[in-house]
Length: 460
Image 1: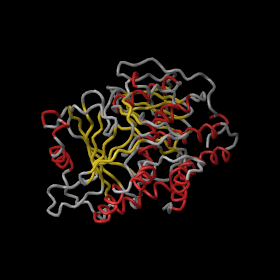
Image 2 (image 1 turned 45 degrees about the vertical axis):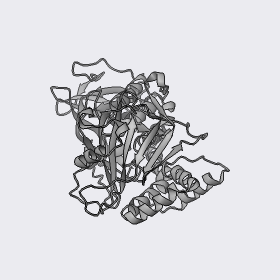
Image 3 (image 1 turned 135 degrees about the vertical axis):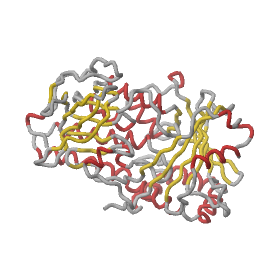
Image 4 (image 1 turned 30 degrees about the vertical axis):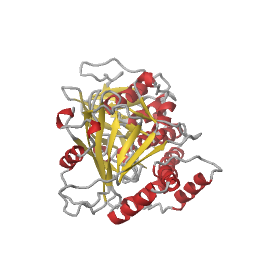
C-alpha cells in the first residue's frame, strides 16, 4: 500500500491543455527510468466508458488527482442497445447530468414484450429509489458526455492513450501505474499512481496482465446491433422480442436471448439481438446473418428494408455475473465489463458499470484517507464486498435464468404463462430488471428481496 509519501495530493486537478492528437498533455511530466515521459496522480483510471468515467467523476469531486485514460478519441462507437433503465438514470442524475429531453435524451415509459403474437407493455415502476422513466441515447454521444463530466469535476482526461501494460513493483507484486502509447505518434508514456482502476472493457488487457482471469463457470453473452431508419423512431417503449430463433435450424428451437428495437428519436432505431451462451447454442450460428433475417420478418409498419440500414452490424461479448475476480487485489480494482458486471438476466450493462465505478470510487476515497497500509487495504476490500452485497442474489437469479434458457420447452411454457397472467408478469418484470423498493412494506417488494437473499451466490 502507499506509504506517507504517496498520500493524495491537495492541489486542484484541472484538465491540462489539449494536445494536437486530441488528448491532453501531462501537466507536469518528468522522465522514468527508461527515459519515457512520466506523470503521477493519486489514481489512474484506464478506460473512459461508463464505469471509468463514473469512477473518475466521484474521485475527482473529492479533490483527488485523477488521470482518466481513453485509448480512442471521442466520439467513438461502442456496441450497445442504447437503452437505459431507471437504474442508469439514477446514476446520471447523481452525476449532475441534465437528463431532460431538451438536453438530447429520448424518454421512455417502460418495456414492451412481444412473444407468440402477443404484445404486453410494462411501465417502469414509480419508486423512491429510482425514477419512473428510462432513456435512450447513442453510446458515441453518451460516453463522451460522461467523460467530459468527469473532466469538469477535475479528472485529467487523456484521449488516445493506448495502455500497453501495468507497471508492477517486483518486490510486492503491486501495480504502481501503467505504460501507454500516446497520440498519433504513439509516444511512450508512463502514468504512476498508488491505485489503478481497470475500466478497459471485456478484453481488459490490464486485468489479464495482472493475472485476473475470467471464470469459466459464469455465462458469457453476445450482442449484435445496427441502425435503420423507421417511422417508429419515437416509440416510448423499449421493445423486446422473445421469440428469437435461428431460421436455419430445422427444429426452429428458441434461442436463449431476445431481439430488440429501440427507437432513437432521431429518425432511426437501434435494432439488435442478445444471446446468452449456455452451452446449448450452436457454435456455427452466423449472428450477423441471423439479425438480418430477423429484421426481414419485422412488420411492414416498422419500415425496415436493407436500404434503410444506416450502419454496419457490429458485435461484442457480454461479460456477465461478476465473472472476473478478484475485483480488488494488489492495488488494482476492476469495474464495469472488466469485472463482468453485465446482468445475466437481461444483458443490461450500463447501470451496473456506473454503479461499480461509484462503489470503487467510494472505497478508494476512504482508503487514501487512512494512515496505515493495513487501514488502506481494509478500506479497499470493502469494494468487492459492496459488489457482493448489491448483486450476489440478483446475479445468481440471472445465472439460474440463463441455465433455464437452455431448455426451450421450459422457456416457452414460462413465457406463455407469464404473458397470460398480468400480475405474474409484472412481478417477473420487476425482478428481472432489478427495480425494487428498499425497506418497502409492499408485499411484492418484500417477496423480491427475499428471493434475492435466498438465491445461491455462487462465490468461489
